Amino acid sequence: QVQLVESGGGLVKPGESLRLSCAASGFTFTDYYMSWIRQAPGKGLEWVSYISSSGTTIYYADSVKGRFTISRDNAKNSLYLQMNSLRAEDTAVYHCARGPVVGYGMDVWGQGTTVTVSS
Amino acid sequence: QSALTQPASVSGSPGQSITISCTGTSSDVGGYNSVSWYQQHPGKAPKLMIYGVTNRPSGVSDRFSGSKSGDTASLTISGLQAEDEADYYCSSYSSSTTLVFGGGTKLTVL
Image (cartoon, rainbow over all chains, first blue to last red; front, side, top):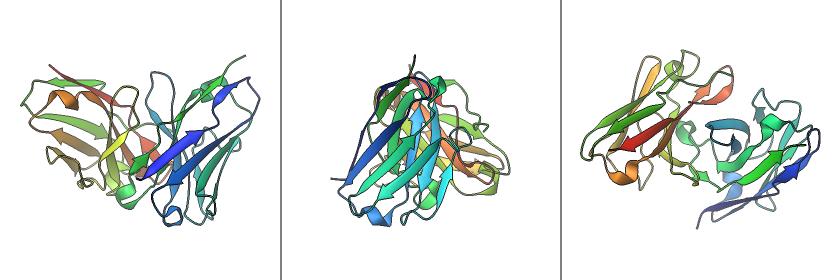
C-alpha cells in the first residue's frame, strides 16, 4: 500500500546537525512533489519545505531558509531533510508528505520522526 | 510567516452540523482555489479531507464539505459523529510564503 516512513530523528544540542529520511513505497515516487511539515509539541502544523518531482524546484519556509536543505533520490524512492544549525524552536515531529498535489493538498502523510533540540 | 486564522475550538452534538472557518488574505485563501483541510486525531498523522477548496479525496465521507467566500474558507461537517472529534487544519497556497497552515481548530463532539 501507499506508505511513507520517516527516520533519523533524535536528541541533538543547539547548533548541531541532523539528517532526516523518508522512504516511500506503493506509488511512483517520481510522479510526485514531496514535502516536509513539522509540528512542535502541543502546537499546529508548520510547512517546512517542498521539492518538485525532478528535484529542480525547491521552496523553504522563512524559518528554516539557509539552515535546512531538502533533497530526494528518485532511484531510492527517498526524500531527505538536512538540518543544520539546529535551534530549540526546531523541536518538533517532522512528517514527510506526498504533495502538493492537485488543489495544493498533501494526500499521504508519514507518522513522523521526532527531533529534539536541547542542551 | 502569518498563519491562517482559525477558531481555537468548536463543538457540536451528534447529528448536528458545524462549520470551521479559515481566514486569510487575497495573497492566499482569497486569491487561489488552493485551500485544503486536514483532520488529525491525537498521536496520529494528519489526513487530507478537502483539497482545492471543495474536493473530497476518495474515501472521505460526504458529510465533509468545503467552501470559500472572499478571503475566508470553511469546512462544514454535517451529521456530526463521535469519531469526528479531532483537530482540523486548513492550508493554502500563498504568493508570499508558498504554503501556509491555519493554527488549528479543536472539534469537540458533546
